[in-house]
Image 1 (cartoon, rainbow, N blue to C red):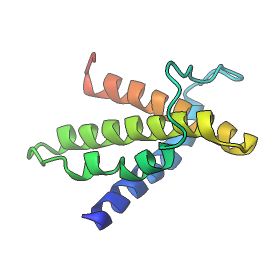
Image 2 (cartoon, helix red, strand yellow):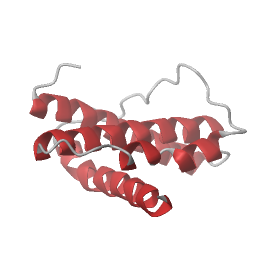
Image 3 (cartoon, rainbow, N blue to C red):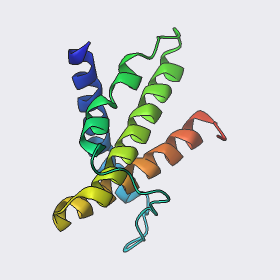
Length: 123
């Protein structure tokens, strides 16, 4: 079970890293504002929360429809990465880590948007 969580986290990171150049080419606004943090996370528990995020993806059942399963996995990973980035932006003591987290949050927000367009989903 732990191995599958690590694999899910790694897949999310790899997908986000691979998608970044493609998303940048699609016209992301230069100097755009970062994501607004509506509710600040509890920094005392942020690390523990981040380390358990992969369980959602690793516990997703296969539906037999590859496109649907891929979309669901990518969406879950993007949401997980955005949540982790939000925690990092709020709790990190290092400006360079907060900046990187902001970029990851933006990339994954764009990824979710593009996934909704590609799959025809409106929610």
